Amino acid sequence: MSLLDTLLDPENCENIDLCGPDGEDVSFEQIAVIPLEGTIWFILRPVVPIGNMQEDQALVFYIEEEDEDRLILCEEEDMISKVFDIYYQMLAESQAQEE
Image 1 (spheres, rainbow, N blue to C red):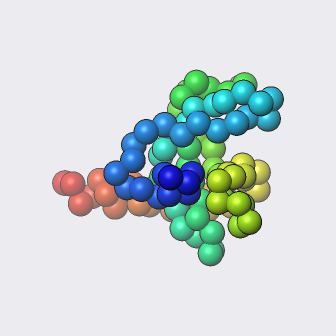
Image 2: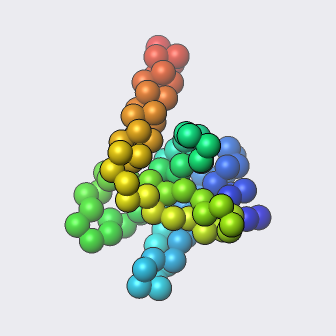
């Protein structure tokens, strides 16, 4: 199963292991998949915080078009904000439905 298939599988709740910039594997918890502006964005939280990250912080990734098994870290603040805005909206809607 490709990385993309794994991330898009609604039944899969397993952590995702990615190779970090230093060559070490980093495990991530899957938080959300957000389709936005023709790209699929993934919110992933490192199981063990990386560097100066807080325990509750997550990162936004997207799939490189040519290689479905390569996630790229989004560093564009505007896009990160848009992705998290949609995530928080989805979360609020889900919680409202549960009530």
